[in-house]
Length: 341
Ligand code: FNR
Image (cartoon, rainbow, N blue to C red):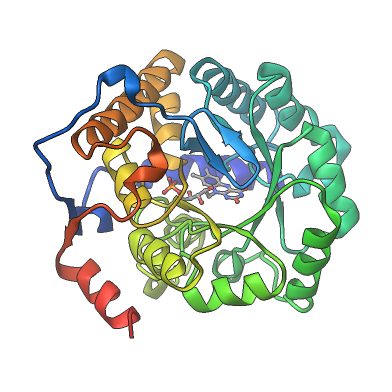
């Protein structure tokens, strides 16, 4: 199987497995408040994550590129909608384009479609400093994501099996790259132990990318003849990942992603201490099944939901949501309680 075919299979299975169902965010309720002193136009979604100025805390998280004409079209459409709605966007892993320059156009199209927008480059932890630099230059990127996907590689029959020097490479990239370096998972969540380890390597930007949405164990298992199904529910639920990282690293620049379905899940992440939130699979599903206009409408709805919650909780800006009252139950409460020790 070629790399291009694999990327198309990832898209197909990720979209198919993205179903409306239970999410860890369902175990968290924001406490309703009845008195507010704001007008709708007082509510401003602009926010800053470190030096990154965002017009909204919502961004499109890393998905695709490098799979030929089809992924180029998806990236062009995602980028056009990101430009129209003013939100940030990450591309999928650029490792393939770093190895084969004929794949570059499917990434470069993102900057072409969105010349002034916030764009994140994306590489794996196997990348050298030189490759990291080229990934950023390819997009004139505002930040660089490094994805950690050890479990995905292990489930993928053709995946990597050697992760030596991963930490040293991350450290070298953070020291050498002039834009913010965001280290993210791919749907299994960052633990507080991992977050501390990354902080010791100099990483200041973390994206939880937790369990609850797109599940690469399931996606890779769909591709295996002998599925390793025991890993289908492996991972740290996104709200638990955000809460435990924020608890231990109050100064970190923290992003939330993994199973965020709407503005309410986004608001819950901000309440738990994230500064912005990414959506991947659920946006891709809308684009693939309903098209660009529906995707723009979905993003507008996410913003509207977020603004309604900010109005109710009397928050002029997204950062003011941090620490607002909530109730947590069931499975997620177990994670909160047991990981607080
Ligand atoms: C991804 N994701 C991803 N992440 C990354 O850092 N590099 C990548 O190349 C990809 N590729 C990719 C392809 C597809 C089709 C999907 C749906 C996702 C992971 C993504 O950025 C995110 O971390 C997870 O999908 C969890 O978020 P959602 O999908 O639950 O919102």
